[in-house]
Length: 182
Ligand SMILES: CC(C)(COP(=O)(O)OP(=O)(O)OC[C@H]1O[C@@H](n2cnc3c(N)ncnc32)[C@H](O)[C@@H]1OP(=O)(O)O)[C@@H](O)C(=O)NCCC(=O)NCCS
Image 1 (cartoon, helix red, strand yellow):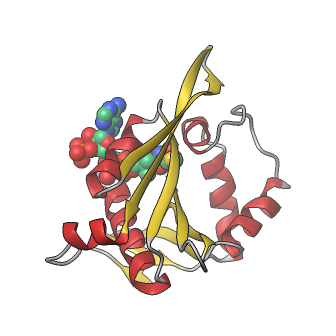
Image 2 (cartoon, helix red, strand yellow):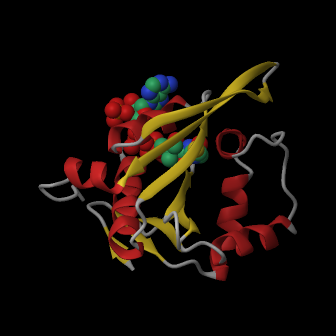
Image 3 (cartoon, rainbow, N blue to C red):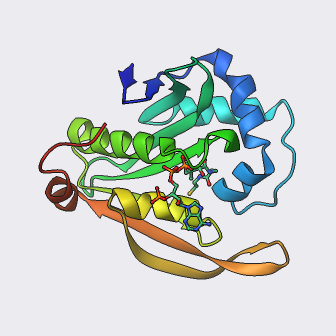
């Protein structure tokens, strides 16, 4: 278990699955994390979420220190741990917790931990262009836009692009040479 200023980042527990399904069933969350159509996911979907958590290289269930309440999750999957040393980051939180800096806090800690603990040389992610809050967080912590898949998602009656973002270990080290803010 780890802590940042305001958050507890702990292991996945089976007891998280109800909250994780409810999180995935928040339309604004689902809209951000997948380019599949936004639809209610049934109870059985918990099996997929459990697999997702258990197959992550690092999974953090995000808890608010102050209340002990469930905020969301973030994860790192070392997709190419050997030769290319690449890893993929993901995060989702209930909307009531957005805009308070928690996303930045969890992302910064988790990416930092991936560099330090896994020895990856880059962290990657994809984000839909209609998700300006997430893009702002990623840019703020140090990710750069590396690519753009045009017309990747048909949503709300129009097309949107999918951005690839990444940060390299040396960029991270330069940004946080004086330590990672908690
Ligand atoms: C993405 C997510 C984790 C961000 O968490 P958060 O706690 O709201 O993030 P923070 O409060 O740390 O920062 C949000 C930043 O986005 C900015 N922002 C929010 N809405 C914005 C908008 N419409 N346009 C531009 N910037 C915006 C905020 O101003 C803030 O930046 P600032 O601190 O420089 O002012 C959260 O919104 C979430 O869980 N979304 C649903 C799931 C999701 O989309 N995950 C990402 C998949 S790639």
